[in-house]
Image (cartoon, rainbow, N blue to C red):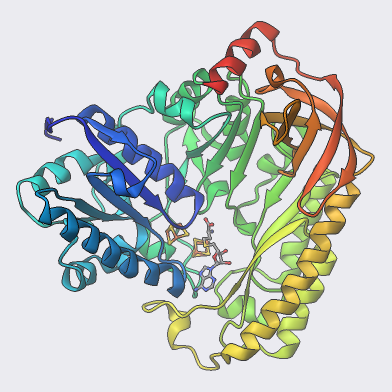
Length: 473
Ligand code: SAH
Ligand code: SF4
Ligand code: F3S
């Protein structure tokens, strides 16, 4: 990569759509541009460079991109009247899937680049500054993570106490509804040592909770120092040994990759949070087959049984698609039945959206929009009921809470339970960054009210005090 020096300081605004991996990627793009004089700003209107980090997963998500580009073009044209300018970049999964169409339909865009090109961003930007329209949607041979600069302390700090960390990217599963294998490419795992180094930097910046990211995160594998293949369970264990790291989560998992090793780690490793996102999409075997999920509803339930045997207090969340081609009332009832049986604490639900180029797009039996809407409403009603039940079931329990921020009123603080539920309570701000034991006394609509019982933190207080003050900067 050429080391280009651009006129400094320039102001950068990245607008992020889609999943958590895009949130992580946006931070890494900011990291990549920081040495080249780009400073992040809070408002798009203040930026010299706006990057749209896009999502292609459903039609609505992709459509947003073109209307946003239209607004940016107007902003740029207005600035040009007074001698100013604006650089417009489109990154992410729409860029990867529809790069050429963006170039054709949106001449205002200066550069288009896919998720595997983020390490080349400074170089691409330098070319765009020289007047070229730049498109980079290759899947390069080199490891982008090895070429991206390490997350800087300043940037890490602004990320607070919890951080995302991509450990795996891409997907070889090819569910028949999904664009991800085309936008993120083949399944790859980041090397163990590389992940550990990044986690150390994050912990050093005050991070206490890591969420490991991947499209099939539980398929992660790497080699240890002795050349032995290790899985995600071992990675979580190694991460838990890093001073400061107290909580580990991972998302998103595929039921087929839920190994015994990982499940056992849920039994043995306290840092591994008892809250698991394990999408199933449908409760009907006939639909699961058409979706190419490669497992039955019974097999999915058996995986959950194994998990709960290892960790009885495990709460589950999932993803569901209603109205996949061929879905009958009976198929949908099977989904409702599965939702009740698993007792999800939470779930994301979607109407099937046709994605050009995927096998689902040309399948017979596309479902009427009105039926999709009706099924989605029924499913959401059931899931909302279960979410509220789960929230209420926490009342009376004493749970560890990671204190994350000051509360809305003076003298109050807020944090999260192992199940990601928001808790508000009376307490001093110096507890920010600590995990304290909290009795849950009341459930509101979307949050809990608690009372601090005692400090359950086991790590040395001196380390924690410095982290707490770092987090408040
Ligand atoms: N395994 C992936 C899933 C990515 S997509 C991951 O890393 O998160 C997230 C969810 O979007 C899927 O689980 C699915 O429920 C939903 N989804 C994907 N494609 C869809 C489509 N064409 N229409 C509706 N929902 C879709
Ligand atoms: Fe998409 Fe299926 Fe891969 Fe998840 S496992 S990213 S839903 S193809
Ligand atoms: Fe969207 Fe790409 Fe994530 S399509 S969900 S941004 S992997």
